[in-house]
Length: 235
Image 1 (cartoon, rainbow, N blue to C red):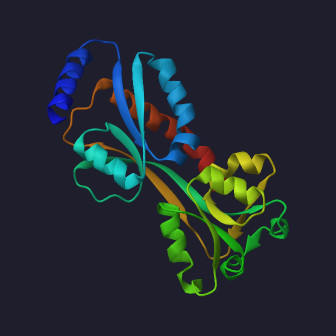
Image 2 (cartoon, helix red, strand yellow):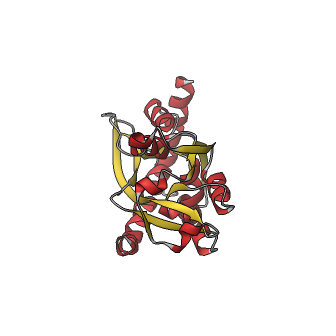
């Protein structure tokens, strides 16, 4: 497998000597990033570089880091922080975690709530991942009294169940925009709680990236830089 990868890289180096950006790029990201952050970026990339073929490796951040380190994934977006000295990282995104309730829920009439009040609600948690780790730590002082009614495997499922008023949850603000706009959920501020999810773009320090991967990195950073003023104003 390593020999095949080295052969492919050698072929790509030859292709990169031309002026046309082309060839394959293997990109790693988790499901939520693929669904909510990447479509517009990849659409722009395909308009500019129609001869590039993107293959998505979808998994959790720690799995993506492993694949980037072993060279089977060219570029990845992962949750920060990371500890690997072998990887180059660009901070690209910061998103606040907010408390989410159905618009059918009586709490939807409020703008703020205390964490003690949240602990009394039927909670829906993600089964694994960064947000689950954050919530386990957040509710540690209340672990004897909280009631986690469901553990769900995806952001999409969590939004649907919260919209149906089957429970309440926490979610990255940008991931809930569609349901907020549709009037199905409301995001509340929890007093004294300031939680953020930070994402970084990662790739190997010691690896010569194909031109297609370099172009994709450039567009992602360009896209995020353009979005920063609006996000700063919103926060």
